[in-house]
Length: 246
Image 1 (cartoon, helix red, strand yellow):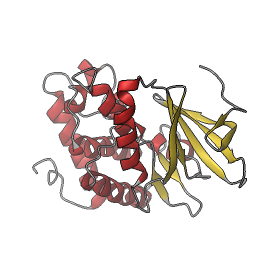
Image 2: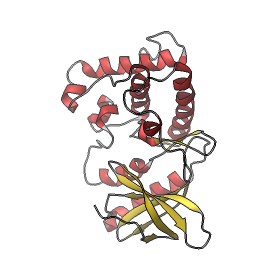
Image 3: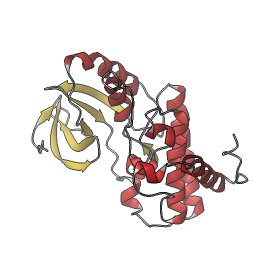
């Protein structure tokens, strides 16, 4: 994996690496004329010519998102078939850094986070976008400690990928719903993943571990959905079973 520090993408020179994920790496970039800072997300996916139109269409959709709890995409481009996004820089890091694995969070803290993420997801779903990778690493903290949902890159990658393969299993397995593991993500898949995150915050561990078969084998899919729905119910003050019955 090449180190891009010092390279220029668009009008930004990459200053240093902020982090790496399953599908991208993020650099702190400095505008070559304005000296302003931004986060530059470089996607690992290489786009062939036939995938360019799909990427540009989806990237325009992401760039139009305007919500107080979604990280703002400022620009996007493709250089040497490598797509990249220019985003607002969130100096507070992500919630995995703020709360390492195994950390138990107070209920009021969890509720504060969940309300912000849920509002962002509702807006994204209304805009016909499925995030596909809800997890603490993709929840950033802004200048005023507000939560900003990031990494909609999968919403860009997946449509072009589906041109080559029928199923879409993009995401992080530990947070993926049964239907997403089957390659059929839907808005409820994001809600399931948020339920896993809430369970982890309240209990210090995720509800299931292991491979796809162990996490969502026969009988486990519905059990997992009930567990994650009940975790959200506890957080939101609803009677357990309210969401899993709906």
